[in-house]
Length: 188
Length: 168
Image (cartoon, rainbow over all chains, first blue to last red; front, top):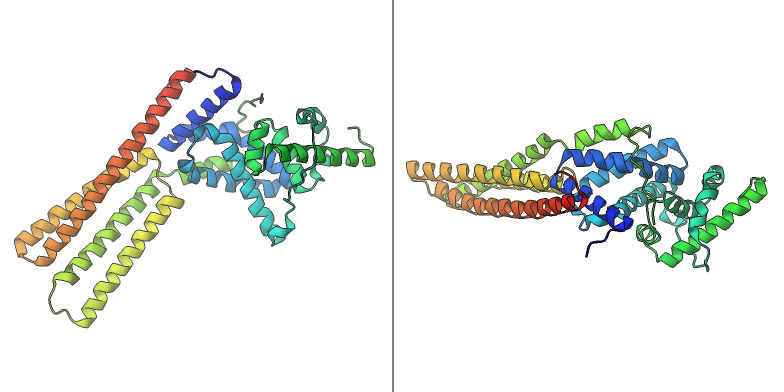
């Protein structure tokens, strides 16, 4: 059966790109960079909240992608794979900065969250400053979801947590952002 | 449903750096250089091993020299394999090129060793030819595996291109 839905189409586009890279087609690598550089940049830039750090991390991400794409088994999972690499590069950077992994707040919070996370996008567009002041875990989950390149299930795959935990984190992040905005008198 | 952002090359300040990175990381010459290093270092280890095994009553210092040559050859071979697996990985097309290089190199090695053995009657040359024969079989297997992997990926690429209405 042919899946004509947009997510199915996107998955096949991703796989087509991944397979051509695995074959060693230079044009495919150029397309990969053209397609994914900006989304990865936005994710890395928002989580690091620094231009210079984001540049270094993104260089590292591309090196890992170029060297690792031959081992990608399912090309249709290209986008969670890319963001997973970006996340690992970010975590390595944070570990270096804080010298100990314990300092990186990546713990889970399984709060109940029934709120539709897609409502975040409009809010986030006017909340850049507040976003940068959030802890890494909350900033990361909001950024990944806000980019709208990944479904909820794919965000969960990138973060290595169940989809319910992603919803919880989104809910909690939004609450924190709202409190921050209220305190500083910015509209949410 | 996710919205897909259009590609925006040049939107980030570091895109030129990434292009340079691609040029460096995807360099074919450096990959083939490591393939050549792997083949050369293996050949050196095989030659030293064959001579050591077949020459009678070698002085101790000569045996140490052969042992060192084998260790050096194998060390370079291990290093080359590591680089080709982790730093300058071979993509499907390059696997085939590397396989062809390996088959050509080991064939020349075996024929040369047999010629030397035939001309000089030295057992060491025949032993080197035998070990070279093992290398040749490995090279042929590598080439066949490379072709299978390439064909599988190319078939998938063409199928997806048809589904997506793209040209290959």
